Length: 406
Image (cartoon, rainbow, N blue to C red; front, top):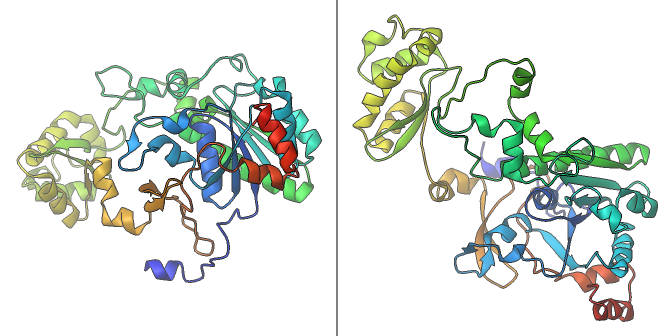
């Protein structure tokens, strides 16, 4: 399908499918900000509440030529920012004033923290009946571990995920990305939409509880069920348990990944690599046989790959309709014409006037397209505007500023 055909019914008067939804985000690091980023990318008006002195905006490295942190620009684009010191009662009162005008409160502080500040779910629901209050934490709002500190790699370790990651004969390895945080952010965004649907039908708000651990377990491919039944689970590294050959193979100038899922594809591969004798040979003809003969199969494929440049090997495999791809860097992916055509890299004007290629939203909507509308704001950049919209006059705002509450 042509890109213009997909967007032929697009309208330009809305920020996205969540245009009109108002979110107050009180979060830190990655899981909460990622959930807020998803909602903002979908068109919601997300106002981020930041504590004075927040240093996340200066987390290295900087995006070259911008003076701006990759961290902040990645998850705080498309948002607005207010500065409130919520440890002060005056700021807590202002926060509840803001709650009165929003649909969603999103937070990822340790359970009980917001209650101590007087702005937990009960206080927000009293001020705004029907509020959807979304909490993300390491272990959830209840359970024996609820009060323990929790970070992304800790959740990877506790869940069992880390034990299966890495080479088959190496130590456990964490994910290179913030996997548990990202999944919790995704589940929090989904939970927000489900709770909003319920509110729209019944008028009832609710507390939505999302944990890093639960999110990682949910998306662990059913391994928790195997664990609960004490079924042995092996670490496979880059290989796949179910199909052979599948894995990374060294070429003359890099690596490729190849997966052969069907026996007919194995026969094609056998011909391509000059081993037609193995197409229907014992130990090779069926996937079941190849799984039992994994080392020999891998050796045959590896020998063919070893003498060829990655591009030549992938072209030959793809030319026969086989699933293969070069193992690339993110820099290579960013320059890929397909990635660019899909708007996954969007040149964005940042708040200081520089530009940066920010990662675009992943979901495409034919009628309500989404995009990176703005770079991340400076902390507190929208404080006065947001507070005035909530009904505070200039004198009150200046009083709060004198008290260092904002």
